[in-house]
Structure formats: C-alpha cells, structure tokens
Amino acid sequence: MPPPLGFIGLGLMGKPMATRLLEAHYTVAVHNRSQGAVRELASRGAIPCTTAREVAQQAQVIITMLPDAPEVEEVLLGHEGVLQGAAPGSMVIDMSTNHPEVSARLAAQLQARQIMMLDAPVSGGDMGARNGTLSIMVGGAPETFAACKPILEKLGHKIVHAGPRVGMGGHANLANQILVSVTLAGMSEALIYGAKAGIDPALLVEAMSAGLARCGALDIKAPKILARDFTPGGKINTQVNHLQYVLQMAHQLQLSLPVTALVNALFHAVQTAGRGEWDQAAIITLFEDLAQVTVRSPLR
Image (cartoon, rainbow, N blue to C red; front, top):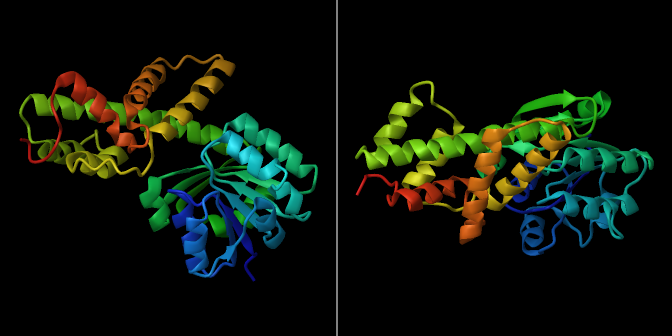
C-alpha cells in the first residue's frame, strides 16, 4: 500500500506536483502559506493542514517545494515545523533548490531524530511539473532513495541518484543551473543578432533547433519570447537565487566561473529593472533594451 504523503509549498511548481500525486491515488496532506491553493487541492481530495507540523503528523513521506533555504529550514525545524510532528522512520524529500550545505545540515538534524532526508531539486519548470516530465537530481542514502523512487517517478521522467550524501542532489542542480543560465543568455544574444540583421526570429529558431545549437531553451523558452509571454515558468528572481548559491559554492571550492559570474550580473540587471517576477526568458529584454530592438514573430 502506498505511504501517506505530505506536501508543503503549493506555488508555481508545488501545486501541479501535488496534483499529480493526488491523481496517482496517493493520500496527500497539504500546507501552504497562502490558503487558496490548499482549498483548491482539498476540493480534489487532499487533506488540508494549517501547519507543517500537522502535515508531518499525517504523513510517512513529507515533500517540501519552497522558494529558498530559509523557508526550508523554518518549515522543517521551526516551532510548528515538520520535526515537531514527524514520527521516527518518516522521510523528508526536499525538492526545493536549496544550498547544498544547508541541506546536509538539516539532514543531520533530522537524522538525530530518526527521520531520513533526501535533497531532490528539479529542473523542467512549471510545464515539467504539470506533465510529470521533470528531471530530478537526488542526494541521500541509497536505501532512502530506493524507498522514495516510486513517488519521484510520478513527478519526473529522469530521476538520477547523484550520490549517497544529502546535498549532492543540490550540487548536481547547481551545475544544471549554470548551463540553464548561460544558455538563456546565449540564446538571447543569438536572437537579438538575428533580429538586428532582419531575420524573422521564428525562422532563426527553426534553423538553430535543427543543428548543434538545439537545446531546451530553444524548445521551451523561445516560443514564449516570440509570443512576448513572460508569464513565469521559472522566475528571474529564482534564477538569481540559484546563481547566488552557485557562486557561493564556487568560492568555497576555490573555483573560477567567469562566464557564470557575468551571466549572474545580467540576471541581476533584469531583476533590478523590476522584472524579477517575469519568466527566466525575460533576460532577453535586457539585450533588447541595449540593442533597441524587440524580438517577436513575425518580425515587425
């Protein structure tokens, strides 16, 4: 019989992920800071909860999908947090983009109370969350991973056990975020170049998608740019947080990441321009401002 689940954090990613688990016939207790999403999922069969502690009291496996490391720590260790309600033998899967060292520290504190933890950050945006096609990078004990893998398979199509220590999933995800960020910036420059040269951006995307330049950014983000739709599937603010963690860890590893540092400054500039709640693809608007051209299709 599948274990009862808890899901904490019903935002852009968390709500569709929790919905998929309900559709897979799991019992899911849910909590979120704003109650609208809780009520919506309760109407679909979820158990509404007012605190993380209450979720943990009703679940064997508790999943968190939260904006940043401080929120994860508060939800797990706070006064009304998971640690206050979880029984020994429970498991926590943190699917937030967390700082790897914070994840490792939280896992140690949970393990002292016989609660096991995985860090399992994801890539794929809100579309991947809705469709169950996320890439999930997992760090933690092999036996905990094996126990939780059937749950993760309801959420993603590629689940990789990155290593036996909590935090290794986070390191894999930060490497992924380097490539995502650099690719978005590179795609933006290519589209700006084409627009300045008078090429219809839709035709340019078609051409680039057939060669070595093909990538997820062209498949998923370029259509949003061409439609001028910056409704977030992943926010600029979130990308800035990701890159902050990358550069912090690079400093600790005595590692130079010059291209990432430059792209980080570009994302910060978009955030400073007041576009932090826009989709990551809105990095192109910075290049558009500089070039005084707008990328859209058909080119006008």
